Image 1 (cartoon, rainbow, N blue to C red):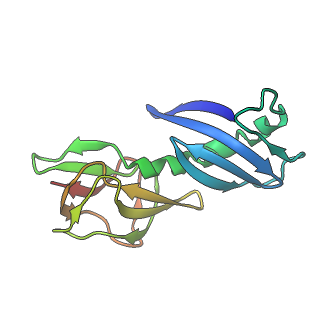
Image 2: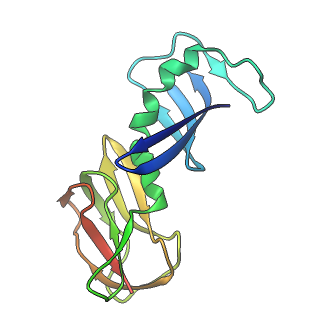
Length: 156
């Protein structure tokens, strides 16, 4: 398994490339698995295993796919910050378009539950609750464009 560690805007992303076959890479970002479609197919097919001591150097060509996976880090949910004492604000980890809002004010949510589906860089990203609580306010609507660190949901 080829591993990389990226720090983007202060956020640390641990990217593991499990395999690369033609134009698809199977990766994990902070423990969440993703299939990433690359613009150009890899020159060779590479499958790495945990026991493999000599993965080919060519999967490094898939390393640019890891930044594409940056939106994939979103499932860990946005950074939480206090919002005028009423709860924690789930923020957008990157700019994009709101594809779906899966919660409404008053809903009781559990940590890890998907609140928002955000499209960024042609990938769908689940924005999850970072704590148990109830939704105090949903600050976005389906179709909205948001910037990085935009307030999405307040959890009380």
